[in-house]
Length: 481
Image 1: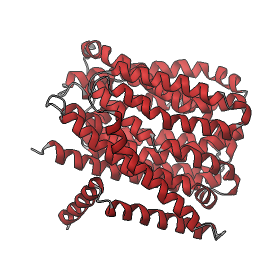
Image 2: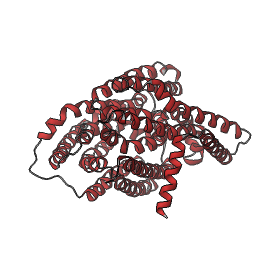
Image 3: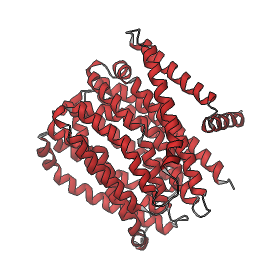
Image 4: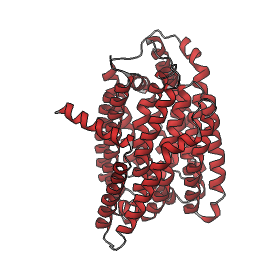
């Protein structure tokens, strides 16, 4: 039997490979689609994303996390959750099908009626794949998750680009998403060799509901937090502006998701397994916090540094205004993976109520802060929202203090040195390329200088997280040879 440390390390490695390959493919297909489609195409699809995301929360109802906290879920548990998801997912689709004209009327976009009715098929399709995905996640089978995601993303991306080349506009984005969900779910069923059966007992649903109901509300509020600005911009601004925001937010989310998804695939199961031994869970959490900071700050601050060159060289000058939004969003995006890690710790302790309070505060206060700058335009609103995310990290830690002795000073010692070194590296890299107007040359100088400075600082300071990461990679390479 593998010990928890080795299992966690392999899980993180496969999680990183999955996230890296996923973001690379999203980058490639995003570039093609960004050049082929208009800001209006992206804006129309962005307007209905919040409805699909909220419906997805309702259908899963937090039972994936509830299953993970059972330690050893039975087939009856999995079967009950699967049928529950299918029933709820189908019901939600029917309701949204008939509500589509009202959505189109709200945003004053008649095209949204037919678009919504097709796009919302993602809800029952994703409902069918929740349990096999949860089963792989709970068992830390990240290799199978990685293979499923990469194959589904590659094939669906090819379909999206082909439709865009054929002149299908926003429909190419919709069918890309539907095919991705269908292919991913199919592959996960194949890997787990599991499928729902009859008869079904919903007794496990009732026993998990107290825990999962709080997670359901929390997840819904999280979705609102992630998509609320799109909803607000969709009501206040032209659809082309929504497209600009959506494009910038997409690239920012892709960057932070690389780190978040890498850790999320192992964080809650590992933290839940570490409960019991005095101080063990706290040690595991702090180690994860250091590793997340070690990766997230240079990645996201670096993305902010190259945002203008990246947008101009990839998806083209007609998206230039999105580059400024992206640069600002990446600052707050660097802290998003830390928030996710805090959430996983709280959930692993079964304290979903604390999670709910934090997410609620994040939405209410974040929305108020953002709207306070509405008269100054979209750029000021994005700045306010990004800085709020940075500051809210303190609130997450204060909530954590209710259930753990980890102090704010401990958390600061685990995170801020990485943030400071990363920020200093980016500042120097920005000045290093200030003498040239060539976008390609500026991009190369920015990346090379920032990476060299950050790695050199890690080595000179003899950072344990850096040394352990290098040792692990060298060990994996030796095993591969």
